[in-house]
Image 1 (cartoon, helix red, strand yellow):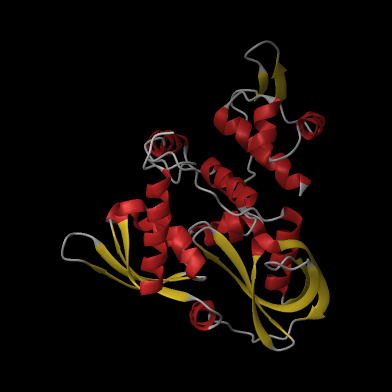
Image 2: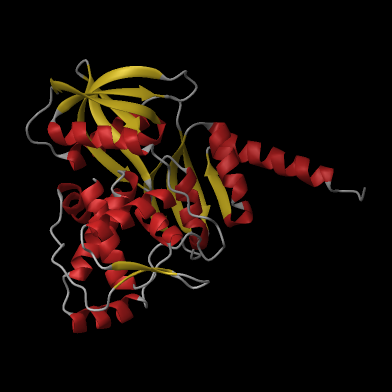
Length: 324
């Protein structure tokens, strides 16, 4: 891993010029002390890296320095392939590998092509931290060491031991047979079996993990898309979930989808609004979610939800009927 980090450090300095130790530490996701040690190692190995003192100082390479360092390792290749389908590299703990892979790809570009591509890339901004309403976009955090063990077990086909914190339960250790990893709307899931029974685990609830040497009991080939559809259907058929028919302003659609468990149907309404059939955990969950949308959403069914929203609105109106 240190060799990969040293390569990334050299490529960062080649592509971006002089950088401070703090900037390098942030890019490489290590401490400033680690960066300083890596600089010493590179200097000892003959890489012409030097320090500039002063307010605008930092570390840089001698002009014209170039070396062939662009071979991709396993995680970098996996990160590039995963990135094609959205944000899997972030959810599955491959973000550093993706950044390293991109630096290597960029370094391999001809000089003229690199300059024009860099200028063009400045015209694109993908997934900033907030949307137009200044709402911060939150991705579930997954412990890096745990995600590494989970990923290794999935790829190697080994059994996996996880310390898992299920909802409203104390964390417990479980040994499972991993099948694959899925990311849906910035949330990551581990599909597995336990004693032959289907299990789906939220990655953000995996507190620790350990790849075991025993082979996992699973088929050689897998259709994750089919398995996910089947488990989603099973999940929606279990428990006390409530299905709600909603008329909604299109501009609030994403907010509703962020809180609902699933969307069963969606079609435009006659007045330009949307008519959606969505599933919530229970009546309380549905009431809370629709209340956040104010008059931009109307629950058409079930009647119990309409009644609870009406009573809540009446209580609010009564509270503010008179000035304090």
